[in-house]
Length: 370
Image 1 (cartoon, rainbow, N blue to C red):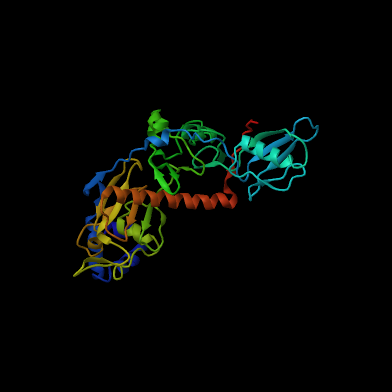
Image 2 (image 1 turned 45 degrees about the vertical axis):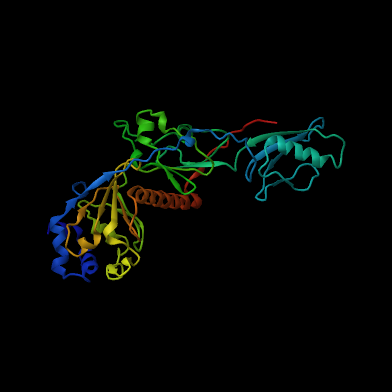
């Protein structure tokens, strides 16, 4: 009964969740026999970084919208002009109409400008210099000193990128150097895919085997170590992070996610074709705990829990709960799905915040070249 008192106003919501299969007294039964996730059968899954992630981008810098270049006609005083590549990929130099330079290197841009100018004058010589990069950027968000969107002016490692942002944030107190960054749950996402960089090994142990090269569009996120949250994702009505409270359980967390799952319509039942699922597969609910690169994964039968046939599971802050809509085939694929969903969800939310003006854009570093 201690847990029911702790959950307080959640009692009615939990009772209604289990009401389709048991009475109110039965719905409280499993709260008296809570088990920590650590006591459930679990397995640690380790993901390795692909060797190609450690190779710098060998392609020459190509122009795109937002890049700033300076061009001038050699031998012609006061001909220098600063231009920004427009959204259509074009620049406007001298008397030329829009010249498409999207995807061109600086030498190619120089040659195209000279070719276009040759229609109006004899053997023009053009100098082209890249002044600022706006088309190739990396997102450095969360608990770093200077979160923002930073330009990539050349091959850059993740360690170098974090240094641009001032590194992980620390307490400004004179009496403590407490870290404000949660390195175990930090991540890199590229093209919607989670990259298993171990930030703890990289930043605390100096392990360069984690120091991959970043690419344009990469999203690097360092969450707060002070946040007390669990994440409920998958086939629930409102997948999101919810505040963690002491003695929080699996059932209470899913119920917090805007009413959780409705057992009467998300049941599993057998037929001649085998197991049929409707929107959720309750016997394969996953609890992911610990480092994102070496997570401990526990699979529980949520359907049995809400029926009072199995004990509820006690959670910890930082746990990721995933309710699947189909049974998993291999555990590693299932975990990859969960981590991709988690990182993509966090990245999307942070991106919305950035678009709302809550984050700055990193300073563009001038670079030269003709």
